[in-house]
Length: 427
Image (tube, rainbow, N blue to C red):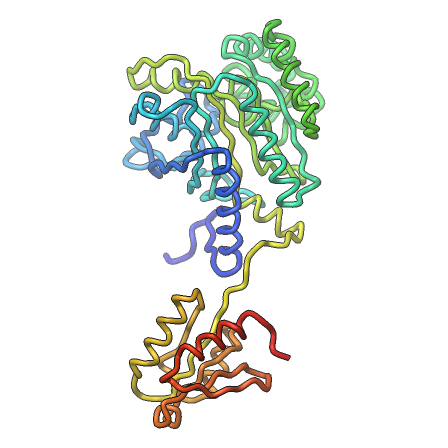
């Protein structure tokens, strides 16, 4: 069967140029803050992603693509693989802290494909590891918020923020949620009903049930915070306000992954999340214990952007992509042989970042004209039997009156003219 797998896409042409443009813009952005790029394997041992809890509705467990009888899994997200790499490569001992990484990763989730959701998708991520101060979160939020609103002109993007606290505090909150939801179970979806006793916090993140009044009225994490945590939240919100960051404090925002234990944040557009992240101080402890390794608490935070969703949002917003048009020229070769001087000319033009194309199977000028038009190239070099005899070549613009003949013995003059005309419009 040769059909394209469900939930995947083929990207080419302008859309791929836009995707590469986003990669370039994000890379330039984060390198200014001293992030370095990291690349991790596309698959890991499944235990890196699965939860210790006996949760039949665990998001990642249900959505993993498994390999070799569930021994391995294709990565569903980028944070856990980077954290694993930090431990196994001993990066905390070889690089100065905090470690600041960024990456672009193909990720995979076995979920029902729909608008903005694919089984294979591209994720951009940031990880700041061994960083305690909440200023790192605020700085990261400020950087990405400014990028989305100012650089990408997504002025209608909505930023929501919450504070999830430590695992101990979350355990108390979870117990209260279970008690709250048990008598209301019939009003919840089957998936949420399964979560009531094992992971009720996930009910707040359910795509459907999170919109119910009974869910919005559920106990809040703020009811269980310590005075120190309340004070930190006050400082964080104060700094966010001083920096004039527009945000909504949402006590029901929990994000989709269990390892968050502090500030969490999410940007959405038209009710679809395009970026988000948070602090995960306890992630290292959790997965290292599964591998019989001890590690001290490593305060860290991360952020991810769904490149595919962001690109779609920018297309819908009529974003003016900063993609410079390529300088292109097409060679119409009308002879049955290849002149070394022509090949040398092509090589020289490409050295000047000029795109040169030709169809060596075509022999008549009309076919070359038609083919170059389909490529969107209207500047032509014409070389036929007559030009071969006179050792010349013609530079012509299709559909316009521009046409000049140059000697092949003086390629410098021809190259100067080509560079000049490709940089301006001929009336």
